[in-house]
Image (cartoon, rainbow, N blue to C red; front, side, top):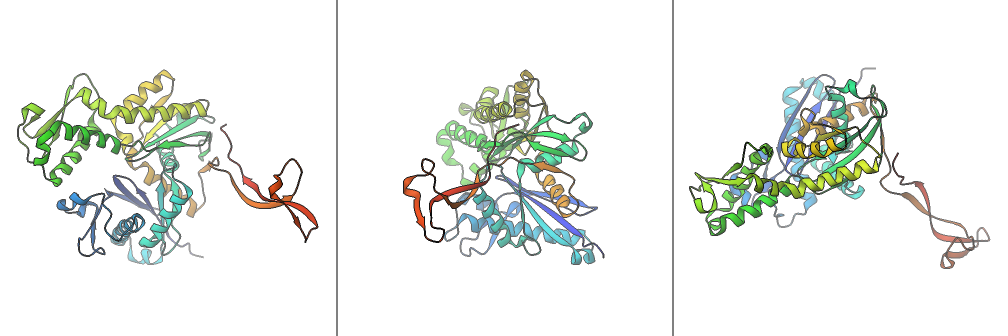
Length: 415
Protein backbone atom coordinates (compact mmCIF):
# COMPACT_ATOMS: atom_id res chain seq x y z
CA UNK A 1 0.00 0.00 0.00
CA UNK A 2 1.43 3.36 -1.03
CA UNK A 3 2.16 5.68 1.87
CA UNK A 4 0.15 8.93 1.95
CA UNK A 5 2.50 11.95 1.79
CA UNK A 6 2.30 14.19 4.85
CA UNK A 7 3.17 17.85 5.23
CA UNK A 8 3.54 19.38 8.69
CA UNK A 9 3.03 23.14 9.11
CA UNK A 10 4.22 24.67 12.37
CA UNK A 11 2.76 27.99 13.54
CA UNK A 12 4.39 30.00 16.32
CA UNK A 13 1.76 32.69 16.97
CA UNK A 14 3.79 35.25 18.92
CA UNK A 15 3.06 38.58 20.56
CA UNK A 16 5.14 40.58 18.09
CA UNK A 17 5.81 38.18 15.20
CA UNK A 18 4.26 34.98 13.90
CA UNK A 19 6.50 32.34 12.33
CA UNK A 20 5.34 29.55 10.06
CA UNK A 21 7.49 26.62 8.95
CA UNK A 22 6.62 23.52 6.96
CA UNK A 23 8.26 20.33 5.86
CA UNK A 24 7.61 16.98 4.26
CA UNK A 25 10.04 14.09 4.01
CA UNK A 26 12.52 16.03 1.87
CA UNK A 27 11.70 19.77 1.81
CA UNK A 28 11.36 22.54 4.37
CA UNK A 29 10.82 26.31 4.44
CA UNK A 30 9.60 29.10 6.72
CA UNK A 31 8.23 32.66 6.90
CA UNK A 32 7.98 35.29 9.64
CA UNK A 33 5.47 38.16 9.68
CA UNK A 34 4.27 40.73 12.24
CA UNK A 35 1.41 39.52 14.44
CA UNK A 36 -0.82 42.38 13.31
CA UNK A 37 -4.20 42.73 11.67
CA UNK A 38 -6.08 45.88 10.60
CA UNK A 39 -9.76 45.99 9.64
CA UNK A 40 -11.54 48.18 7.13
CA UNK A 41 -13.51 50.85 9.01
CA UNK A 42 -16.72 50.15 7.07
CA UNK A 43 -16.54 46.40 6.42
CA UNK A 44 -15.22 44.16 9.22
CA UNK A 45 -14.93 41.22 6.80
CA UNK A 46 -12.15 43.08 4.98
CA UNK A 47 -8.76 43.30 6.65
CA UNK A 48 -5.04 43.49 5.96
CA UNK A 49 -2.41 41.65 7.96
CA UNK A 50 1.30 41.20 8.58
CA UNK A 51 3.52 43.22 6.25
CA UNK A 52 0.51 44.25 4.14
CA UNK A 53 -0.90 46.67 6.72
CA UNK A 54 -0.87 50.25 5.48
CA UNK A 55 1.03 52.65 7.77
CA UNK A 56 -2.06 54.76 8.50
CA UNK A 57 -3.74 51.72 10.04
CA UNK A 58 -1.32 51.75 12.97
CA UNK A 59 -3.15 54.53 14.75
CA UNK A 60 -5.89 52.08 15.75
CA UNK A 61 -3.60 49.26 16.82
CA UNK A 62 -4.66 47.25 19.90
CA UNK A 63 -8.30 48.33 19.57
CA UNK A 64 -10.80 45.52 18.99
CA UNK A 65 -13.13 46.30 16.06
CA UNK A 66 -16.72 46.97 17.03
CA UNK A 67 -18.70 43.74 17.08
CA UNK A 68 -15.69 41.40 17.16
CA UNK A 69 -14.12 39.64 20.14
CA UNK A 70 -10.50 38.59 20.56
CA UNK A 71 -11.17 34.98 19.51
CA UNK A 72 -12.72 36.15 16.23
CA UNK A 73 -9.81 38.50 15.53
CA UNK A 74 -7.31 35.70 16.15
CA UNK A 75 -9.28 33.42 13.83
CA UNK A 76 -9.19 36.08 11.10
CA UNK A 77 -5.43 36.48 11.48
CA UNK A 78 -4.83 32.73 11.47
CA UNK A 79 -7.05 32.40 8.38
CA UNK A 80 -4.72 34.82 6.56
CA UNK A 81 -1.72 32.77 7.68
CA UNK A 82 -3.49 29.59 6.51
CA UNK A 83 -4.27 30.98 3.06
CA UNK A 84 -0.75 32.31 2.62
CA UNK A 85 0.83 29.00 3.65
CA UNK A 86 -1.42 26.97 1.35
CA UNK A 87 -0.73 29.29 -1.63
CA UNK A 88 3.01 28.99 -0.94
CA UNK A 89 2.84 25.20 -0.62
CA UNK A 90 1.01 24.92 -3.93
CA UNK A 91 3.69 27.03 -5.59
CA UNK A 92 6.64 25.08 -4.24
CA UNK A 93 5.40 21.49 -4.13
CA UNK A 94 4.39 19.31 -7.08
CA UNK A 95 0.68 19.62 -7.87
CA UNK A 96 0.05 15.86 -7.84
CA UNK A 97 1.81 15.51 -4.48
CA UNK A 98 -0.27 18.33 -2.97
CA UNK A 99 -3.47 16.67 -4.17
CA UNK A 100 -2.50 13.49 -2.35
CA UNK A 101 -0.89 15.04 0.72
CA UNK A 102 -2.40 15.32 4.18
CA UNK A 103 -1.52 18.72 5.65
CA UNK A 104 -1.42 18.93 9.45
CA UNK A 105 -1.07 22.20 11.34
CA UNK A 106 0.76 22.36 14.67
CA UNK A 107 0.41 25.54 16.73
CA UNK A 108 2.67 26.38 19.65
CA UNK A 109 1.54 28.16 22.83
CA UNK A 110 3.33 29.32 26.00
CA UNK A 111 3.74 26.61 28.62
CA UNK A 112 2.13 28.85 31.24
CA UNK A 113 -1.16 28.95 29.34
CA UNK A 114 -4.13 27.15 30.86
CA UNK A 115 -5.87 24.18 29.25
CA UNK A 116 -8.79 26.52 28.45
CA UNK A 117 -6.49 28.92 26.57
CA UNK A 118 -4.93 26.04 24.63
CA UNK A 119 -8.41 24.82 23.71
CA UNK A 120 -9.49 28.28 22.52
CA UNK A 121 -6.38 28.51 20.35
CA UNK A 122 -7.19 25.15 18.77
CA UNK A 123 -10.78 26.23 18.14
CA UNK A 124 -9.56 29.47 16.53
CA UNK A 125 -7.27 27.44 14.26
CA UNK A 126 -10.18 25.22 13.21
CA UNK A 127 -12.31 28.28 12.37
CA UNK A 128 -9.37 29.61 10.35
CA UNK A 129 -9.42 26.52 8.12
CA UNK A 130 -6.51 24.64 9.68
CA UNK A 131 -8.61 21.61 10.59
CA UNK A 132 -9.89 20.63 7.15
CA UNK A 133 -7.86 17.42 6.93
CA UNK A 134 -6.67 16.69 10.45
CA UNK A 135 -7.24 18.30 13.84
CA UNK A 136 -4.72 21.09 14.56
CA UNK A 137 -2.17 20.04 17.15
CA UNK A 138 -1.25 22.27 20.11
CA UNK A 139 2.32 22.00 21.38
CA UNK A 140 4.22 23.65 24.22
CA UNK A 141 6.64 26.35 23.00
CA UNK A 142 9.64 25.47 25.23
CA UNK A 143 9.21 21.78 24.47
CA UNK A 144 9.35 22.42 20.71
CA UNK A 145 12.27 24.77 21.18
CA UNK A 146 14.14 22.16 23.20
CA UNK A 147 13.57 19.48 20.55
CA UNK A 148 15.02 21.66 17.80
CA UNK A 149 17.86 23.11 19.86
CA UNK A 150 19.04 19.77 21.26
CA UNK A 151 18.92 18.10 17.85
CA UNK A 152 20.70 21.03 16.20
CA UNK A 153 23.46 21.64 18.75
CA UNK A 154 26.97 21.73 17.28
CA UNK A 155 28.31 20.03 20.39
CA UNK A 156 25.48 17.53 20.80
CA UNK A 157 28.13 14.86 21.36
CA UNK A 158 29.19 16.67 24.53
CA UNK A 159 25.80 15.95 26.09
CA UNK A 160 25.61 12.87 28.27
CA UNK A 161 22.94 10.85 29.99
CA UNK A 162 21.82 12.48 33.26
CA UNK A 163 22.81 15.99 32.08
CA UNK A 164 20.19 18.56 33.05
CA UNK A 165 19.28 21.16 30.42
CA UNK A 166 17.32 24.30 31.31
CA UNK A 167 15.45 25.80 28.36
CA UNK A 168 14.71 29.53 28.58
CA UNK A 169 12.22 30.49 25.86
CA UNK A 170 12.25 34.30 25.89
CA UNK A 171 9.68 35.75 23.51
CA UNK A 172 7.92 39.04 22.98
CA UNK A 173 5.20 38.60 25.59
CA UNK A 174 6.06 35.58 27.71
CA UNK A 175 9.11 33.78 29.04
CA UNK A 176 8.88 30.02 29.68
CA UNK A 177 11.42 28.07 31.74
CA UNK A 178 11.65 24.26 31.86
CA UNK A 179 14.41 21.83 32.80
CA UNK A 180 14.96 18.39 31.26
CA UNK A 181 17.10 15.47 32.34
CA UNK A 182 18.63 13.60 29.43
CA UNK A 183 18.05 9.85 29.64
CA UNK A 184 19.43 9.08 26.17
CA UNK A 185 21.08 11.40 23.63
CA UNK A 186 20.40 9.28 20.53
CA UNK A 187 17.50 8.81 20.06
CA UNK A 188 16.63 11.81 22.23
CA UNK A 189 14.87 10.73 25.44
CA UNK A 190 14.31 13.33 28.18
CA UNK A 191 12.21 13.74 31.30
CA UNK A 192 11.09 16.97 32.95
CA UNK A 193 13.00 17.51 36.19
CA UNK A 194 10.28 19.70 37.61
CA UNK A 195 7.17 21.54 36.46
CA UNK A 196 8.03 24.47 34.20
CA UNK A 197 7.47 28.08 35.18
CA UNK A 198 7.14 31.36 33.36
CA UNK A 199 5.79 34.88 33.42
CA UNK A 200 4.72 37.76 31.23
CA UNK A 201 8.15 39.40 31.00
CA UNK A 202 9.11 39.30 27.32
CA UNK A 203 10.76 41.99 25.21
CA UNK A 204 7.56 44.01 24.72
CA UNK A 205 7.84 45.08 28.35
CA UNK A 206 11.14 46.77 27.45
CA UNK A 207 9.33 48.49 24.58
CA UNK A 208 6.78 49.81 27.07
CA UNK A 209 9.54 51.23 29.24
CA UNK A 210 11.03 52.93 26.19
CA UNK A 211 7.66 54.41 25.28
CA UNK A 212 7.40 55.94 28.79
CA UNK A 213 10.92 57.38 28.47
CA UNK A 214 10.17 58.61 24.94
CA UNK A 215 7.04 60.50 26.05
CA UNK A 216 8.82 61.93 29.09
CA UNK A 217 11.86 63.11 27.10
CA UNK A 218 9.85 64.59 24.23
CA UNK A 219 7.61 66.63 26.54
CA UNK A 220 5.56 69.16 24.56
CA UNK A 221 7.27 68.03 21.34
CA UNK A 222 5.47 64.69 21.60
CA UNK A 223 2.16 66.21 20.49
CA UNK A 224 3.81 67.41 17.28
CA UNK A 225 4.26 63.81 16.20
CA UNK A 226 1.37 62.12 14.41
CA UNK A 227 0.11 58.80 15.84
CA UNK A 228 1.80 57.08 12.88
CA UNK A 229 5.19 58.68 13.58
CA UNK A 230 4.91 57.92 17.30
CA UNK A 231 4.37 54.28 16.45
CA UNK A 232 7.24 54.28 13.95
CA UNK A 233 9.57 55.80 16.55
CA UNK A 234 8.78 53.00 18.99
CA UNK A 235 9.27 50.44 16.21
CA UNK A 236 12.65 51.95 15.39
CA UNK A 237 13.75 51.17 18.95
CA UNK A 238 13.70 47.45 18.04
CA UNK A 239 17.06 47.52 16.24
CA UNK A 240 18.69 49.48 19.08
CA UNK A 241 17.22 47.07 21.63
CA UNK A 242 18.47 43.90 19.98
CA UNK A 243 21.96 45.34 19.35
CA UNK A 244 22.48 46.58 22.92
CA UNK A 245 25.51 44.88 24.51
CA UNK A 246 26.33 47.19 27.43
CA UNK A 247 29.97 47.43 26.37
CA UNK A 248 32.20 50.22 27.80
CA UNK A 249 33.27 51.31 24.31
CA UNK A 250 29.74 52.51 23.46
CA UNK A 251 28.24 55.07 25.79
CA UNK A 252 25.42 56.41 23.60
CA UNK A 253 22.71 54.83 21.44
CA UNK A 254 20.30 56.31 18.93
CA UNK A 255 16.68 55.81 17.89
CA UNK A 256 15.44 57.45 14.69
CA UNK A 257 12.43 59.76 15.07
CA UNK A 258 10.57 60.38 11.78
CA UNK A 259 10.00 64.03 10.73
CA UNK A 260 12.03 65.36 13.68
CA UNK A 261 15.16 67.45 13.15
CA UNK A 262 17.41 68.80 15.92
CA UNK A 263 16.03 69.36 19.44
CA UNK A 264 19.27 69.51 21.35
CA UNK A 265 17.71 70.39 24.72
CA UNK A 266 16.09 66.94 24.88
CA UNK A 267 18.89 65.02 23.21
CA UNK A 268 17.61 64.74 19.64
CA UNK A 269 20.26 65.22 16.96
CA UNK A 270 19.53 65.00 13.21
CA UNK A 271 16.29 63.21 13.94
CA UNK A 272 17.83 60.66 16.33
CA UNK A 273 16.97 60.37 20.02
CA UNK A 274 20.15 59.86 22.04
CA UNK A 275 20.07 57.34 24.89
CA UNK A 276 22.87 56.79 27.35
CA UNK A 277 24.20 53.38 28.29
CA UNK A 278 22.69 53.84 31.75
CA UNK A 279 19.29 54.69 30.28
CA UNK A 280 19.43 51.54 28.16
CA UNK A 281 20.22 49.42 31.22
CA UNK A 282 17.30 51.01 33.06
CA UNK A 283 14.97 50.00 30.21
CA UNK A 284 16.20 46.40 30.21
CA UNK A 285 16.92 45.56 33.82
CA UNK A 286 13.40 45.19 35.32
CA UNK A 287 12.55 42.60 32.65
CA UNK A 288 15.96 40.89 32.60
CA UNK A 289 16.07 40.70 36.41
CA UNK A 290 12.68 38.98 36.40
CA UNK A 291 13.92 36.42 33.85
CA UNK A 292 17.02 35.68 35.94
CA UNK A 293 14.81 35.26 39.01
CA UNK A 294 12.75 32.67 37.08
CA UNK A 295 15.92 30.83 36.00
CA UNK A 296 17.31 30.86 39.54
CA UNK A 297 14.09 29.44 40.99
CA UNK A 298 13.99 26.74 38.31
CA UNK A 299 17.60 25.73 39.01
CA UNK A 300 16.77 25.37 42.71
CA UNK A 301 13.65 23.31 41.93
CA UNK A 302 15.64 21.05 39.59
CA UNK A 303 18.45 20.54 42.18
CA UNK A 304 21.14 21.39 39.62
CA UNK A 305 21.52 22.35 35.96
CA UNK A 306 24.43 21.69 33.58
CA UNK A 307 23.41 23.83 30.58
CA UNK A 308 21.06 26.72 29.80
CA UNK A 309 19.66 26.97 26.26
CA UNK A 310 18.48 30.50 25.43
CA UNK A 311 15.90 30.49 22.62
CA UNK A 312 13.05 32.63 21.30
CA UNK A 313 13.05 36.05 19.65
CA UNK A 314 14.19 37.88 22.77
CA UNK A 315 16.60 35.00 23.35
CA UNK A 316 18.77 36.52 20.60
CA UNK A 317 19.34 39.67 22.67
CA UNK A 318 23.04 40.23 23.40
CA UNK A 319 22.36 41.97 26.71
CA UNK A 320 20.03 39.23 27.94
CA UNK A 321 22.63 36.61 27.00
CA UNK A 322 25.43 38.48 28.78
CA UNK A 323 23.37 38.97 31.96
CA UNK A 324 22.34 35.30 32.09
CA UNK A 325 25.92 34.22 31.33
CA UNK A 326 27.28 36.36 34.18
CA UNK A 327 24.77 34.80 36.58
CA UNK A 328 25.38 31.26 35.28
CA UNK A 329 29.17 31.53 35.50
CA UNK A 330 28.88 31.99 39.25
CA UNK A 331 26.81 28.80 39.40
CA UNK A 332 29.19 26.93 37.04
CA UNK A 333 26.45 26.49 34.41
CA UNK A 334 27.12 26.72 30.67
CA UNK A 335 24.93 28.97 28.51
CA UNK A 336 24.31 28.53 24.79
CA UNK A 337 22.43 30.61 22.22
CA UNK A 338 21.61 27.98 19.56
CA UNK A 339 21.63 28.86 15.88
CA UNK A 340 18.35 30.35 14.67
CA UNK A 341 17.20 30.78 18.26
CA UNK A 342 14.24 32.93 17.20
CA UNK A 343 12.79 30.17 14.99
CA UNK A 344 13.74 27.20 17.18
CA UNK A 345 10.16 26.86 18.42
CA UNK A 346 8.41 26.71 15.04
CA UNK A 347 11.09 24.40 13.63
CA UNK A 348 10.71 22.16 16.67
CA UNK A 349 6.95 22.05 16.11
CA UNK A 350 7.56 20.73 12.58
CA UNK A 351 10.02 18.11 13.87
CA UNK A 352 7.52 17.03 16.54
CA UNK A 353 4.73 16.87 13.97
CA UNK A 354 6.79 14.81 11.51
CA UNK A 355 7.73 12.37 14.25
CA UNK A 356 4.10 12.07 15.36
CA UNK A 357 3.08 11.33 11.76
CA UNK A 358 5.67 8.58 11.50
CA UNK A 359 7.70 6.59 13.96
CA UNK A 360 8.36 8.81 16.94
CA UNK A 361 12.02 9.11 17.84
CA UNK A 362 11.94 11.81 20.51
CA UNK A 363 10.60 10.78 23.90
CA UNK A 364 9.59 13.49 26.38
CA UNK A 365 8.16 12.53 29.76
CA UNK A 366 6.19 15.38 31.32
CA UNK A 367 5.19 16.19 34.87
CA UNK A 368 1.55 16.96 35.58
CA UNK A 369 0.87 20.67 36.06
CA UNK A 370 -2.38 19.99 37.89
CA UNK A 371 -4.33 17.31 39.68
CA UNK A 372 -6.93 15.58 37.47
CA UNK A 373 -9.83 13.58 38.83
CA UNK A 374 -13.55 12.89 38.76
CA UNK A 375 -16.24 13.39 41.35
CA UNK A 376 -17.65 10.20 42.78
CA UNK A 377 -19.52 8.68 45.71
CA UNK A 378 -17.89 6.20 48.06
CA UNK A 379 -18.62 4.24 51.20
CA UNK A 380 -19.11 6.64 54.11
CA UNK A 381 -16.46 6.36 56.82
CA UNK A 382 -17.00 8.15 60.11
CA UNK A 383 -14.13 10.58 60.78
CA UNK A 384 -12.95 10.50 57.17
CA UNK A 385 -15.92 12.13 55.46
CA UNK A 386 -17.95 15.24 56.35
CA UNK A 387 -21.30 14.62 57.98
CA UNK A 388 -23.09 16.83 55.44
CA UNK A 389 -21.83 14.56 52.59
CA UNK A 390 -23.42 11.45 54.17
CA UNK A 391 -26.56 10.04 52.53
CA UNK A 392 -28.41 6.71 52.35
CA UNK A 393 -28.40 4.90 49.00
CA UNK A 394 -31.50 2.76 48.63
CA UNK A 395 -30.00 0.72 45.77
CA UNK A 396 -27.04 -0.50 47.84
CA UNK A 397 -28.68 -0.17 51.27
CA UNK A 398 -25.56 1.63 52.46
CA UNK A 399 -24.54 5.04 53.66
CA UNK A 400 -22.36 6.77 51.06
CA UNK A 401 -20.35 9.97 50.99
CA UNK A 402 -21.09 12.27 48.05
CA UNK A 403 -18.89 14.97 46.48
CA UNK A 404 -15.72 12.88 46.74
CA UNK A 405 -12.90 13.06 44.20
CA UNK A 406 -11.02 10.12 42.75
CA UNK A 407 -7.67 11.34 41.43
CA UNK A 408 -6.23 9.57 38.42
CA UNK A 409 -3.35 12.00 37.72
CA UNK A 410 -1.46 13.57 40.60
CA UNK A 411 0.73 16.66 40.50
CA UNK A 412 4.16 15.61 41.69
CA UNK A 413 7.40 17.36 42.64
CA UNK A 414 10.79 17.30 40.93
CA UNK A 415 13.37 14.59 40.42
